[in-house]
Image (cartoon, rainbow, N blue to C red; front, top):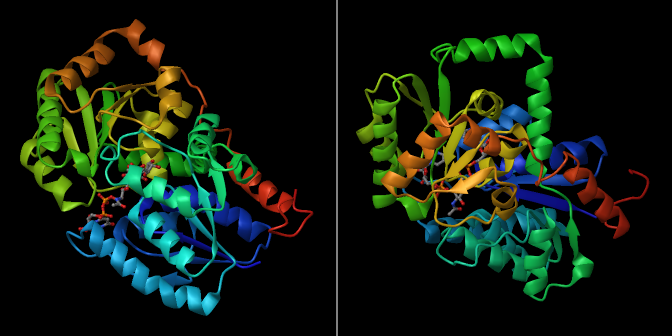
Length: 379
Ligand code: UD1
Ligand code: UDP
């Protein structure tokens, strides 16, 4: 059984890295294809986890459109599928790499295994284009690895057979726990991370910020940046740290609004280890990221989600994340409450693990054994 694993962006690579490490460990035959929809941010993850791609489609272009990404992948992956002739293609999540690679595999009649299957908001334009990407991928997929029971229910509602849905937990928690343990156990690493971020005041609370969603471009980002500027001016005793996504649609407004403020630190996208350290060190996280909504509850960090919808309902139900949208006043009010009201903060800052226990990859491989897709005797 030949397995091809494809990913294109930072989060897909982080979330597939522990599965690749497990496949390597158990000598399961596989090859890795990077679409490189992201270039720099993907290479950062490959370095961190010591993974190299067997095939690199190298498709990233400045200001790439959704059609550019889809069509480049469809054309460029064909020679990989023709040459390696995989029996199964592993895809992850909801990026345009996920959908385009799945479509190409379908055209080649190759079975698809979808990791992080079944997340839904019910709104095709939020997040855009991810809600469509994951629904379209589900239609083409044979093996659905759902992170939670809620995700499984979403798939059942779309008439997908329960025989091919397996609830595993989210592999991001496998990656997170791996890195968190490494930071906590390696004194020199911790010391070097402290030095790297020595610009942070030891006695100051830190608000960590990320943002990149397409539906927030324009007005949404203007609002987010205005709110952060006002918060930084109001709370001069708080450090605001923003690793800025490489998308030019993000970098332009962020620089325009937030450069030159003493307590706002605009930094480059961080490799996964320093970013996990920043999450551990933060007091609150403001983000529109999907993955961070899954990681933060494990670390006991409250998250204000700058979006109008979320597919991460488990964290919402657990009370560790709150939707604040992109309204300036709401972002300011909710952040202010968390910075000033300890009881409210403690209520949100509880460590819960709705997304897994660090054994999602093991469950994926167990399922593959049960279905006789890989040799028996691993688990
Ligand atoms: C993509 C995914 C999104 C995912 C996000 C994770 C799609 C359509 N979007 O959004 O689902 O949540 O990644 O971060 O699949 N760029 C660089 N270097 C990089 C990465 C990006 O320069 O390493 C710049 C390029 O100019 C590129 C632009 O960012 O054209 C946009 O990248 P793209 O992958 O199209 O969209 P993201 O917003 O990154
Ligand atoms: N992340 C990182 N460095 C950063 C910002 C984020 O390693 O500077 C990690 C983060 O911990 C999470 C993932 O990247 O695992 C989220 O990626 P992103 O927000 O780009 O995408 P999304 O999860 O929204 O698809």
